[in-house]
Image 1: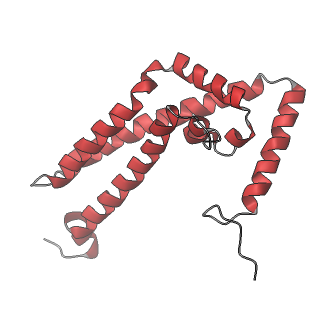
Image 2: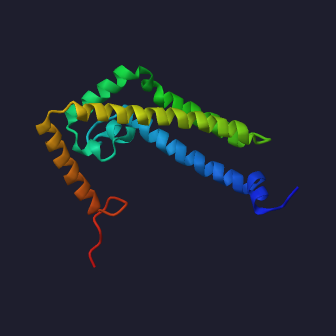
Length: 169
């Protein structure tokens, strides 16, 4: 067996660390998507809309627009209501795979890949819905939306990465 750094990474501790980091990132993204679908209460400022790929656009949407997009999402993909359950199932399956001896990197990869495909589908669906929604806006509404979006982006620019106002020296 070759003891090159690549071979060591593939078969040793490095692979497990990389897989664990990848798992954490995938679960975080999936958690944002799935969790936001069912909540849009005070302080959410767009919850589902923001997390399904709308990003700063949701900040510029009215609460009514976000509700309309949510309804459209459930009409187009009623199965998305199962996202939380699927997220929990994925987490449990991935944890079991991580703890298994011997560890099966291929099974772990396959499970993460199916999780990724589901998340990618949800993001694409959210983006498609937003694009259709904006395309159907009358000109005056679209311009007002652009103004609100610009204001939101300007506000974000004035904040640090953690969302706090920059410190003044």
